[in-house]
Amino acid sequence: MNNNYTIRNLFALLMSKIWIIVVFTILVGAASFGISKFIIPMKYESYTTMYVKNNNTVNSEQNNNVDLNDLNASKSLVSTYIAVLKSNAVMEQVGFKLTELYNENDLSLIFNINNGKISTDDIKECFSMSAVDETEVMRISVNTKSPEISADMCNIIAEIAPNFLIRVVGAGSVEIIDTAVPDKIPVSPNVSLITLIGAVVGLSISIFIILLIDFFDNTVKETEELTQRFDKAILGKIQSIETKKKKSKTDSIKLITDKNISFNVVESYKSIRTNILFALGTCNKKIFAVSSPNPSEGKSTMAANIAIALAQTGSTVLLIDADMRKPVQHKTFKIKNSNGLSTLIINKSNIAKSVRRNIVKCLDLLPSGPIPPNPSELLASEKFGELLEKFSVDYDYIIIDTPPINVVSDALVIKNLISGILIVLKYASTTFDDVSSCMKQIDLAKTNMLGFVLNDICCNCGSLYYNYKYKYNDYSYVSASDVSSSGKADAE
Image (tube, rainbow, N blue to C red; front, side):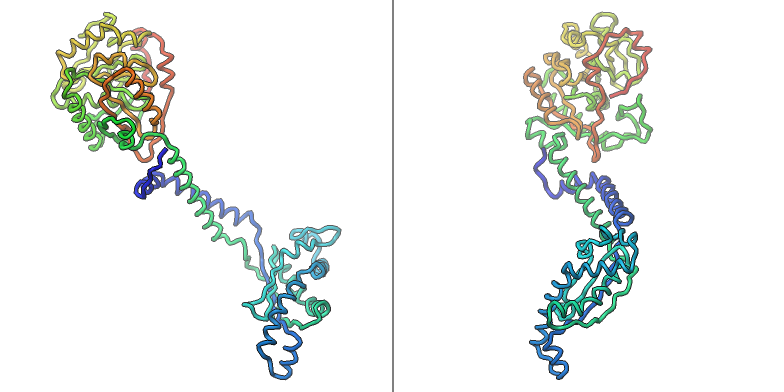
């Protein structure tokens, strides 16, 4: 859960999801446009105005002597007239007049009709009456789906109003100023305004959802929070590796020897190399393991590229693929896996046949060999320890690619044979709960932790899990011939 927000990281978060915001805003705006344009019925408005006079005003006008009190009396009379004109009796007369002018089918498109009579409530909803700017002028407007019916309703009430008001109120009079005419231009819906409001709503909802998801996001994105929670060194950060070549299933691991790899990625690996050299500076053994909490977090890519980076300094380096459940390094460097670590430990091959020399200058590779039924036991055997002792004489650095810690314990059974372990985390994929579980196992095994590397950093990073964990738990023994003839699987 992220609850330490600043304007800067909020802006960065929103910019990283800008395409979601833009698409959602456009979709909601377009939906609002479609609804307002094609679903919401158009309404047409007509109006009539009448001048309200009280008895004193009439007498004063005849004497050419209209004072302020007379005008105020007329203004107050407007409110009384409006209340009277909104009565059911007036509405019934309007409805009766409408049925004389239009057939029932036309009227039923606008009003509810029962036994040939229009609902007075429906008629009331169409009317709007008010004083114009608090004067003695009364404005009556009608809003319906038909411009002709709107105009006729205004004129009907203007026609019946004088006599009805005099009979009911018994004071004052009204004089028609404007006669209503049909207006073919609809007053609603306001398509532009509704579209704009829809777009703003879409924008607001998309931003809210992004912030809500980020607030409850428990994945690793900030190295500072890693340091605060686990008090371990951050050895480096690697951005997402993309090349100009089309990505394929057999070429998913990108090595820094690839000319298409960006300069920033290469330099990041060199920086990690330097930090590793410092971390191993006080250790007698220059042997370390590379692992991760979960599958598919890039630990095999990391191990291969760190090995290459160390070899580029002129040091002799051995990369051991100790992931004997789902080996990858033989595919990465495009070599056969008929002989390797598994056959070497059980004396089915020798070092000369198992170790591939100079796959990169100064870098040798010991592949996993055929998948055994007991990888943990092989790594915990005395034979593996003896092999590392022999290799230590010939190589300056030995890097061991091990399975994920939260899946199997292979990486921890060799704790006494290595100087430490480097943990690879995947940006926006590995959760802090995953890291916590991994660290508990490392602490429980009393294994030296060299530090973290945050891998695959990108603005729009997604989680690309596959059934790696099941392959770890559900492995089966295959022979060397089976391995050499098997199809290439997806690299990590």
